[in-house]
Length: 207
Image 1 (cartoon, rainbow, N blue to C red):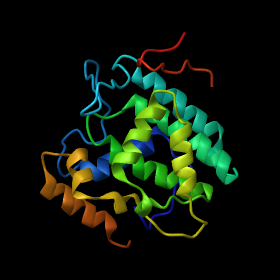
Image 2: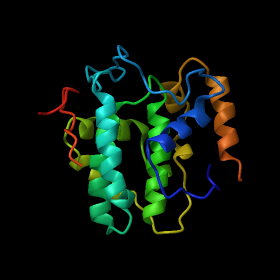
Image 3: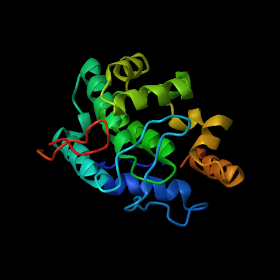
Image 4: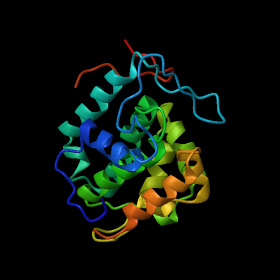
């Protein structure tokens, strides 16, 4: 994916294709959204992601918003970081897949940032800090994530990758049951080649 052209539409279908390509070697349901009854909490916390009966409406909302904004292209760096933090927090809250959301969303955000001309310097980021700030943003406190993202934006043309975050800890957190298959998949990817109600902090729809 690193050397492929970034598509003009970075929509939900694209996010699902990223998940499918990352996890098809180890998950038979790679690329499929979670189903009714698939309720998930952030591991090691009491934070509950959007309820299964609501999260797809949240996805419609956030991807509709991103499309109307041309996926944040043409913004100055400060505004880009602020809006990206808000949209990423919302996407984090929806938690579209049963597993593998962190790596999938990181690659998706990388593509958004590259397309917008504000590449992210992933190699300078701390995995645990980024996770904590994403959860805060998902709960409606996106300011700290915006500051962290702004501090790690590079100039156009700078090459970095969210796969720089592929520490042993992140691989285990992303998919703990098949580290060998995940490591092989990481190596493969490293090779050159409107108006919808928003989800509230509880994962319910705000009326």
